[in-house]
Amino acid sequence: MEYHVPENTNAQLQVFNSGGIKVKEIQLVQSKGTVIIPTEHWNVGTYTCNLIVNDKSIKIEKIVFTGK
Image 1 (tube, one colour):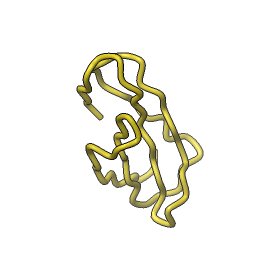
Image 2 (tube, rainbow, N blue to C red; image 1 turned 90 degrees about the vertical axis):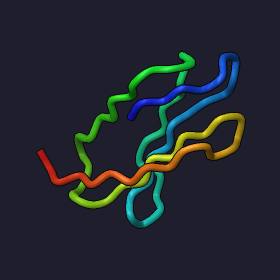
Image 3 (tube, rainbow, N blue to C red; image 1 turned 30 degrees about the horizontal axis):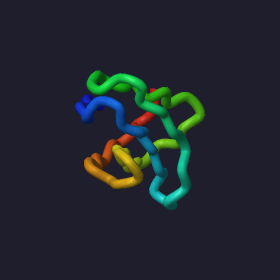
Image 4 (cartoon, rainbow, N blue to C red; image 1 turned 60 degrees about the vertical axis):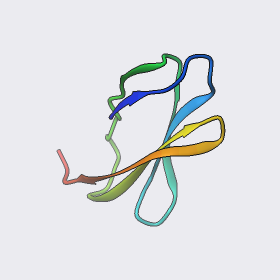
């Protein structure tokens, strides 16, 4: 997932499974870049990626994981 956030902000990417359970949280230390989300141990299904900046959701994307 590509992202661009203002510098000097608290930014993180949260990933939730279809049941609403958080399966991954990644702190973003750079103001822009691409996050490669590790998917080992994931079940096949739909996941929601939520980009959070200063405690506010600014971007939501759905991804479909079909296995390896």
